[in-house]
Length: 467
Image 1 (cartoon, rainbow, N blue to C red):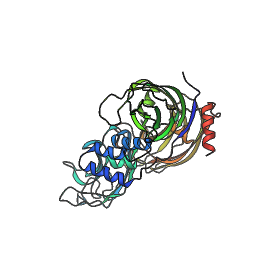
Image 2 (cartoon, rainbow, N blue to C red):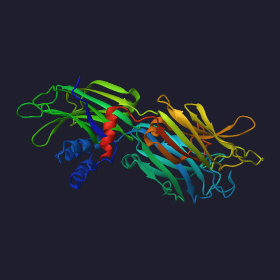
Image 3 (cartoon, rainbow, N blue to C red):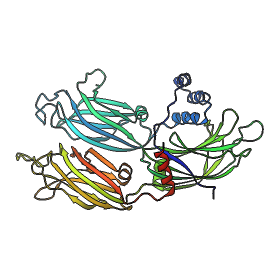
Image 4 (tube, one colour):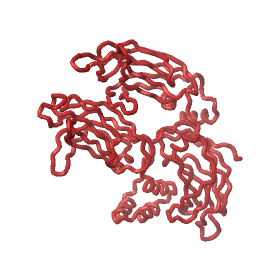
């Protein structure tokens, strides 16, 4: 098909930032009047760099989520006693947190036992695709009849998209005319799809492009971006509205990414004109593996007029496990007590089972009568490219069926990319299980059997090391 494959490096650094206050001020003025297209025009006209102009334009148009919103509810303090010391916990209110996206509940914590300074340490991964205007973390006091409202923290979706993560503690707000007391400690993080691996890119041809030149025809070229980072650029084809490039590129990608863009430009002596673009979400690339075909270009001015088409091919190869994993199961922290039932006091007797794709590869001893077990046990096992995940399941040893105390699951891609992991993970529960609390401290080291033999990856690794 193509000319020699071009290695175009590694995607994974900090995104560049636009710093023109005059352009932004003018765009803001247009937006305040409700004139979105005017704001876009103000920004597009202000830069000599076509890539910067495209990034700015897409930043205004693509403020949508495509991935997960991960919410960690740690605890709260100084909450009011709405039950006068007569609640279910006999220690003030019986608080829980309800998580809502645009008014729709997506999850809620367990009811905490300590009403004034509750601890939850619960995590919620919520799939999201599209716009979310606000995220509300609402605290309630659990009662036998109607639950009492304690307060809330509200986060704007646009702020989360910009910052990627918002952390507490933050003071609780109240309903209009009321006063809230206390604060909530939390973390809300936007997690786009993890886009780690190798990307083979083929730019084949375009057809029926717009003529942006007064004399002659457009001189088109293509810039490929992963989010707002340029990974490849074709040569310009002179005086041709249906150019053929047949150029191939290879890029290593890493990190959480939203989309791959193919942007078509007209090469000019002054400012290059945008001829259109296509956007392919990374979630679709990951799911399908290969995307190829002819796609209609979106006109840059959003007029709806035909902008022609572009023919491309993308092949995504995720990293794979092939080697040994050494794990250290260190300790559990503030686990749930599943044995303190009724009038019979007791404590959990936790142990950990380590699994690879459901197959047991290690099991710790049982820690008796504690919610803060210390194991410090080590296991080593082989992994192969077919393996998808390593899971750490915590169970409470009982006479009958053992109770689930939560789990931590690490995907193959995360292990292959990070190689060394030492962390305290908030435990997760099965779907609908809100009783899981606490953390698990583990260490993990991945050692590949042999160096990657793909010449493109070897060349890219050498290029990165030389920087």
